Image 1 (cartoon, protein in one colour):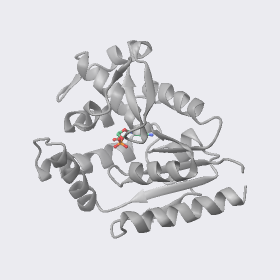
Image 2 (cartoon, rainbow, N blue to C red):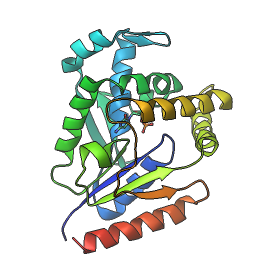
Image 3 (tube, protein in one colour):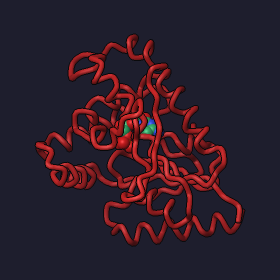
Amino acid sequence: MKKITIAIDGFSSTGKSTVAKQLARVLGYVYVDSGAMYRAVTLYAMQNQMISKDYFDVEKLIANLGAIKLSFKYNDTLGFAEMYLNGVNVENEIRTLEVSQSVSQVAEISEVRRMLVLQQQQMGQEKGVVMDGRDIGTVVFPEAELKFFMTASAETRAKRRYKELLERNDDVSYEDVLKNVESRDLIDSTREDSPLMKADDAIEIDNSNLSLTVQFEKLYALAKNAIEHE
Ligand code: DC
């Protein structure tokens, strides 16, 4: 059977990665979390004193992009590929609120986007890939056979994210998480280069009131149909 490309875009914490991982697993496709790549570049900038709460040396980060080597390695136990930054597993470190608070600023930089989009296109050139992010259906794979655009209210998303961070024992308040979700929405959708937007041919899924199972069944049925018609 022919393989297709599935693009899943949407606002932060809409559960894109959960459903993308599930879809990839049942279809036998590769899952790529493009947000993890922006997060890893952000972590590199933090580790090298290029960015902090009120400081960002954009030129220094751009000058050092060549020193950032990103790779994904499949973890059999977890059932998905983890993010490596210069050979080090950073899958946990890139999920902290500190990284979330700086990542949208890093994702605004065209040089960073150009580098990551190229790598993402290479990862998907054989098709058989489910990639989630903000610009997958619009910029990375505008020709993708199937595109989803996920939405949910900011409060619903902040509650989900807060629960996740608590489970990881992160010391955060719900108010800070909600503020972060809202400020990332604003930066992600108003930035000049590749702002978050729904591709004309994307199917919009508002999952504020959808269970994970119902949501998965819906996307899986659409994916099976798209694959059969290839
Ligand atoms: O999906 P996420 O929340 O892990 O993404 C982290 C940030 O990276 C998000 O605030 C915007 C940016 N991003 C992007 O600009 N383009 C992508 N394709 C994926 C993520």
